[in-house]
Length: 388
Image (cartoon, rainbow, N blue to C red):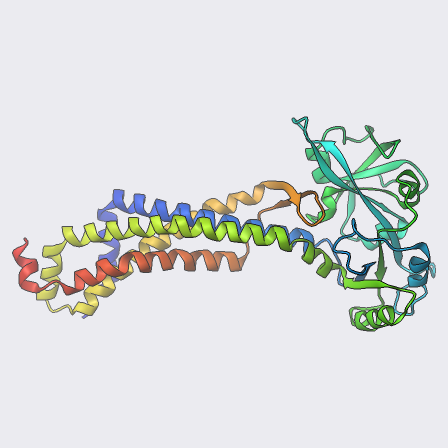
């Protein structure tokens, strides 16, 4: 005979205090586990969504980031002539020649400066970033000392409001707009006219070239053409893949740290679950003997106590996930180790994270409840009834 599930649920309700305490410990572990996964997912979503699979980015060979790269004017002009490059309604090639530099600005409420990326780009570069919208003010005018700032910059740094001025590269720049990058990395950048930026920073070469291709299937042909041209000593990547590489170092750090913390906390949670289940076995010895006398097999006793532990863990897992879901309202700002600039990103709860978190909680319940369940199943009928 099998023990009804209602019997298991009533036992958990009878021991409400220990149930809540044990489930709370598991909920804390699941909260930490889910928070780390959400942070990593938010980082990847922010950087990968920065690019478009229709765009290809060209950098100097062996350059890991745009900051380290240099593309000469001749090389940039040659890219515009390649047949795989798409053209706009006006017949001009959809190519953006850009420069990228780092500046230091104090954060709000702090005297310590933090690095921000300043991107100089032409009008074509703005059109290629379709996810970027100006939400306050307007876009900068080509040929002027005007700049627009990302939403994360406007929210987190001093002197970045519309109408205020930032001084860098020996010049004052007027902020004329705030842009929303759709939770992408552009929210953490400052944009201005590429020619003005090149002059101010005394740059003779671009940092990168972004090209819109005729279609996603054109990338391999475009890459082969660039690689085979001795005048173009450049490396070509799909734009999302480039930004995905930018997240690798920080993503690995978050993942390793999160796994270490989760393992440490889960050991405590499993010990707590084990103590709770051992106490349940000790308090219900006579009850277990009665169940055995009524004809319930050892396997049924084992299964009932194991299900009880799993339900306890599931309750903790659900509570931990509910608490973790509120983290989506927060934004984290930290340094991207690849570009050495500030990057703002949020927590992202996905279906995969929900499944992994619940599986993690059930694994804790299984490990924590297995030995007490085995002990309950091994009790002899006579010894159990005598204990009453």
